[in-house]
Amino acid sequence: MTTTHKVRTNVYLDADIKAKAQAIFKQYGIGLSDAFNMFLSQSVLEKGIPFEIKIPNAETIKAIEDARNSRNMETMSFEQMQEDMKKCITD
Image (tube, rainbow, N blue to C red; front, top):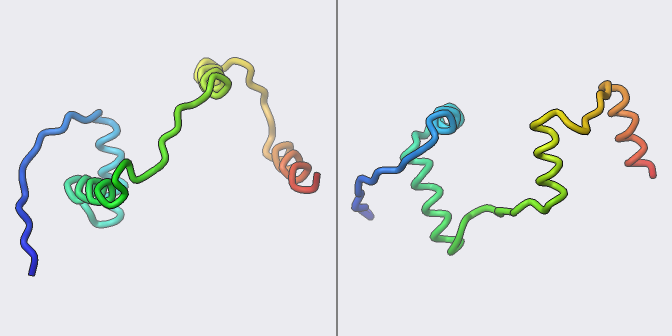
């Protein structure tokens, strides 16, 4: 049987993100400490961040800013969106 030596550490977190993450982890039956240990274990196995991190390009940054400021937006019904999606699939 392998025993592990555990240490206590302090991490500063955004309170809102922490609460939302805890609600998600609760659905899996794990706590925040378990989730952090899983992340760290995967980081060690991958020898890096265990998921892809992308820096958005200028076009994406502008689109995000526009969306946050309700600029360059158009109203579209669900039906219109379905039709546009069908066109993309068939073209």
